Length: 173
Image 1: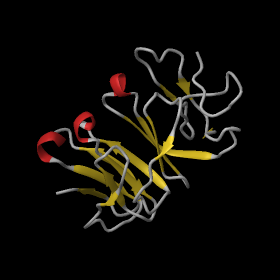
Image 2: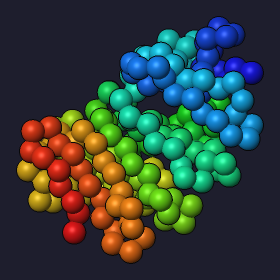
Image 3: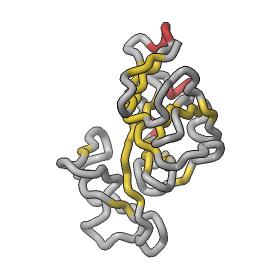
Image 4: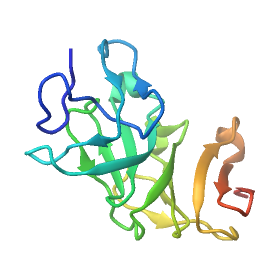
């Protein structure tokens, strides 16, 4: 059935939405028929809050922890631990709330690490699942972070890659 966020009318509520394209389909045990599409989600009681989603990251352990993160244009990072039924802002220390990219550690179940790339604010990292954020972008020549990705062997090399607006790709050392 439908998974409603906020107080959207029956049949119009979804777990989460992404801008443009054909949306996102979340599949797996207990997630039948949760197709995600559209441009906005309503999180206030009356469903009117305009949260424009620019990024989404899903815990690699989603089947067990039901954790998703969204990065928004003006409201920072939001987190759900119940598959989208309820959302919490997790912005302590995140000084720029225009979040364009997110990346969840492949070891999230144990390290609770997540990176957020912002518009004009660089990169922020949390090691407590979003509880607090620290700026970590030393050496990057652009503060506009369009994309983030973990190295395929992150467990051994600890590298994170950042794609910027006009300055190329950077790798952590």
